[in-house]
Length: 228
Image 1: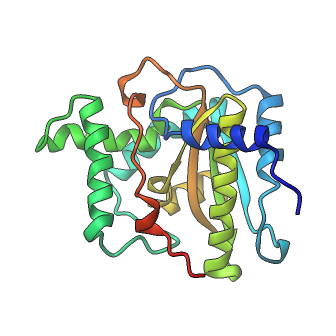
Image 2 (image 1 turned 90 degrees about the horizontal axis):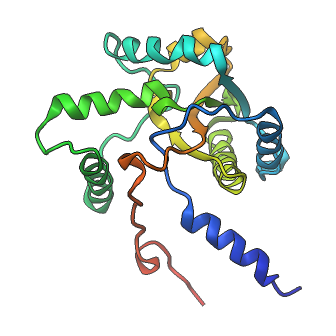
């Protein structure tokens, strides 16, 4: 087994450390050549038996603007409907981590505890794609079930790291999948394709306070067991 190339390891560590979920973007479009490189890099994702179950629908330009505010209006008048069940509940450390992330977000934009109107408005920004110039909607083949979705999760991770390496910011959004019928109709997604997640991406607005925090990670001892 060859020794790892320290320079490559360092680059990967930097990408993993610096990547964060971006919630405010510049209006600068993603150039076609950068988008092409991003999709080519993400396509190297591994999958079970190399089935590559993902399909990516990228929306940008006028097509995205036509959807952006319609989506936010839609979610205010329709109940959520997903292709995959969302978590039944958050308890224990999972609830604590979720709350920590939420309060970091709210604190960054000056939302005080108990201000449900302001927090609701911030939630709607998900469906305006946080102003991103491009959105990718990831779907899987229905017949491949849970493991098709798992493979798509691996693809999403590769997409996010590839974006980071190209100077792009991104955020994976389960919220976009919470109203699957809207996306299915507007994007012409067939019934045999199940919506897993959306990814808003583009160039970060580094001056916006919402991009000023980085979420924590649990200690390794809390999430890993080594048996030897």
